[in-house]
Length: 136
Image 1 (spheres, helix red, strand yellow):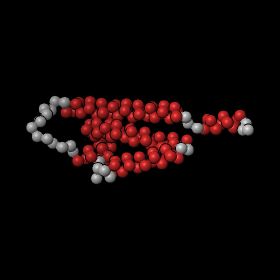
Image 2: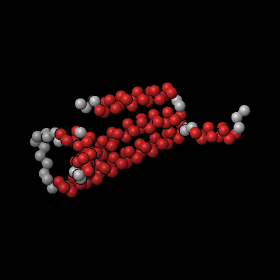
Image 3: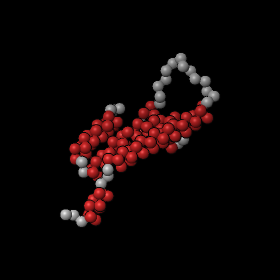
Image 4: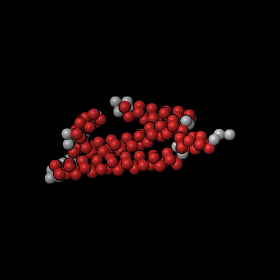
């Protein structure tokens, strides 16, 4: 029979499913709120800078090429370019569920649940593949 102290240390070392759910929920909330805040700031800046310009809807003009590359989006946002800040907010919104999968992978590794570690690692690899090579 194991001493009581050993059992309580083992129990403290494991994350319960409820703990993981709470952490993942907080991550999702924070990701959505952060992305919304970034989009609102970028939108307000855009309106401040270009609010008096009359829109021309006669012809469709695609977005700038530099708004399709993560590095250029971050550079533009750091320079204070409003469209890049809005685009960064949208990137953060897309990255939020991917971060959720990565966090659950860490939780499953911590819980030593091999089946879910393998399954979650495959899902994360597919998401990464789609994100990196799916747009090429």
